[in-house]
Amino acid sequence: MVQVRVLGIALDAAQQHLVLLKPLDGLEPGAPRVLPIWIGSQEATSILVALEGERPPRPLSHDLITTLFATLDSRVERVDVTRIENGTFYAELTITTPSGRQVVDARPSDAVALALRAAAPIFVADEVLDEAAVPAAFAGEDDEAAEGGSGDEGRDDEVELAEFKRFLDDVDPEDFQG
Image 1 (cartoon, one colour):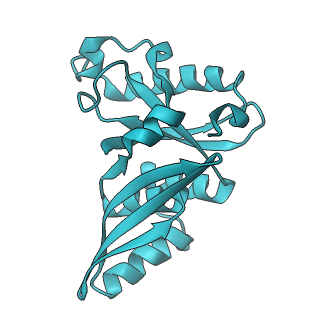
Image 2 (cartoon, rainbow, N blue to C red; image 1 turned 120 degrees about the vertical axis):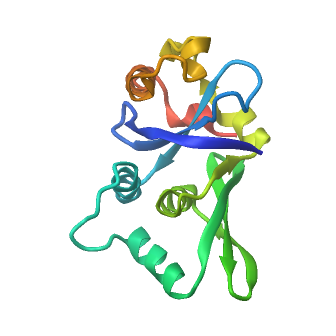
Image 3 (cartoon, one colour; image 1 turned 45 degrees about the vertical axis):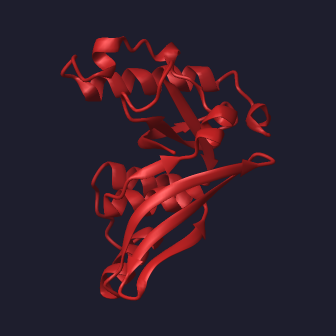
């Protein structure tokens, strides 16, 4: 398993939403990669709200689930994107509850939205990265910037996301099916 961070949300050429997961700097050997996972528009909105630290006027579904967990003295401990089968990604939520640790099957989009709200780490199986990740070299990151030496991480993410969006103009979701 490789720990990742949410790079952002993007649209492909067909205007379908993707959540972009990138291994944390220094945790993955070799050239940097980005894992695109196609998701629904509501999940994309929920992830964006969490990334931006916004609070909607009324709770979104993932906010409600987070509140329910807190009310039940439970929390999301971690998220694992475990496998990909026929182009479908699978994830698991590890939840700490008063009765012990529970592992629950989840869609990656829902799991990521909950992890962001709980500040829980997100991991991706090496096999999933090997099968579905794309090189991030097009982003123009050099080694110093990748290690945080530039001092302008937000700008690096914007450049990387813009380059990835250009890449998506020429990609088809079927390219990532197993």
